[in-house]
Length: 330
Ligand SMILES: [Zn+2]
Image: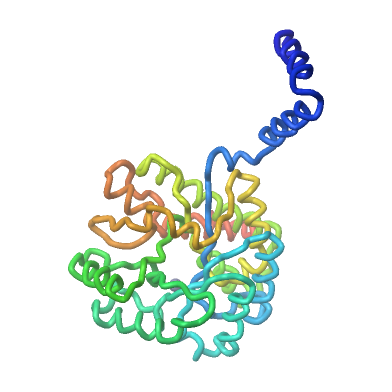
C-alpha cells in the first residue's frame, strides 16, 4: 500500500494531473467492465418457425410488435429469423409476410428454415433439397436475406450418413451454409405448456413463468458453453435457438438483461456465423442437434448430455409446480 502510494505520488509529478486522471478513469473502467469482456462469452439470437402458430397470450401481430420492441429496448442490433414460407398459408400465417418484413425493417435478418418444415430424418435428400429450394424461391433477393439453412428439428439426417452427406453437398452446391445452433433451451416446449394451460383455463403465475424461461435459456447456454470449451479449448460465438413465441415477445428484453448480468455479450448473427465453427462438419453416429454437442461427441471429450428430452422432462414438472402451483406434480 505504502509503495503504491509513493509510486502514485511520483507518477503524479511526472505525468501531471490530467494524465493521471486519464489513467485512473481507464483503471476504473476496466474494473467496472462486465466480466464478459474478459471471459469473451458471446451469443447471437435466432428465432425459428416464422410465421409461427399463435401462442397463449397475443395475436401474431401483437407478438411481432412486442418482439421488435423488446429487441430494440435491449439494444439487440441484429437477430436472425428463420422462415418457413409454407406457414404463410396457414390460418395464423395471415399477414405473415408484412410481419417478416417488419423484422427486416427493424435491422434483423431472414434465412431459410425450408418451405414446409419437414424433418430430413423422415424424407429423402432429394425431397428435402426440393423443400429448401421452395424456401429459397420465396426468400432470395429480399432485404435482410442471408444464405443460411436452419434444419427443421435440427435433424441433419440422423444415422443415415449417405443422406447427411448428400444434403451437405446439395447445400454447398446452392451456396447455402448451415445456420447451426450452439445452444438450445427448448423454449418451444415451455411455449406449448403455456398454450395447453391457457386452453385448459388455468391461471399462470407470470413472474414464475418469466423466471423459468430465463433460467432455461441461461442454463442451456452455460451448459453448451462449458461443453464447447472442453471440445474446442475456447468459448465460440454462440447461436441460441429460440422460436417466434409469445414467451420471447414477453421476455426477450429481460433475457438480454439476464445474459449481460451473467457475463454474456449479445452479438449480431453475422458476427456469430463468422466464427471458425461455421466450417465444422462433425462426423458422429447421429447427425443433428446442437453443433457444440456434435463436436464434443466427435472429440469424445464429453458426450452431449443435454439432449432435448432432458430439457423437456425437467421443464414440465417445474412449470406445473411453479407456474401452475399444482402441488401434486413432481
Ligand atoms: Zn423449426
